Amino acid sequence: MIKILISFFISLTFISCDVVNQDLPQNNYAQNQRAGEIFERCIACHGQNAEKHALGKSDILASYSSLQIKDALESYRAGTRDKHGMGALMKAQVIDFSGFEIRILSVYISEL
Ligand code: HEC
Image 1 (spheres, helix red, strand yellow):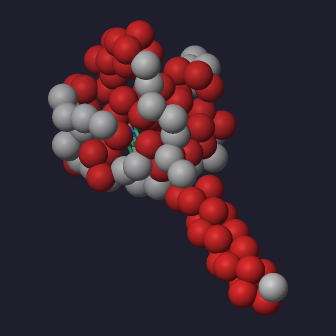
Image 2 (cartoon, rainbow, N blue to C red):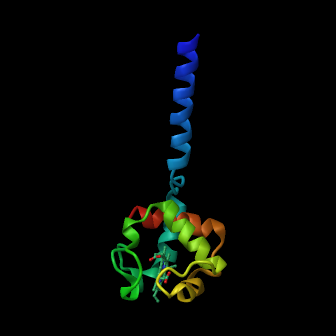
């Protein structure tokens, strides 16, 4: 009985780790198409493959997970992120995005 209890608690720990590390769900084909269209607006600064320091300032988005991108974009939209002193510029980029657009865009960029 004790063994069963112990293995139960061990598996619980693994399950909760999984939840914490979980990334956003994949885009379907249409969502990827849409996200690709939106990303056109970001390429000038962040690069075709999200490989640039935008305006010599930003982090390289290719190194971010989809969750990190989503969190960053949501905070810019809310006006609460200003990591390199250019948060206002990024706020203007994402202010009209819906939560759905932010999500599919974040998944798309993380897979470039
Ligand atoms: C005019 C240039 C420009 C455009 C266009 C632009 N960005 Fe940015 N982006 C920046 C700059 C500069 C920063 C750093 C902002 C700061 O100080 O926090 C940044 C930061 C970011 C970050 C967080 C990375 C970090 O360093 O904190 C994400 C994510 C991001 N941009 C996504 C996007 C997306 C998605 C688009 C298109 C919808 C976009 N950006 C369009 C210049 C741009």
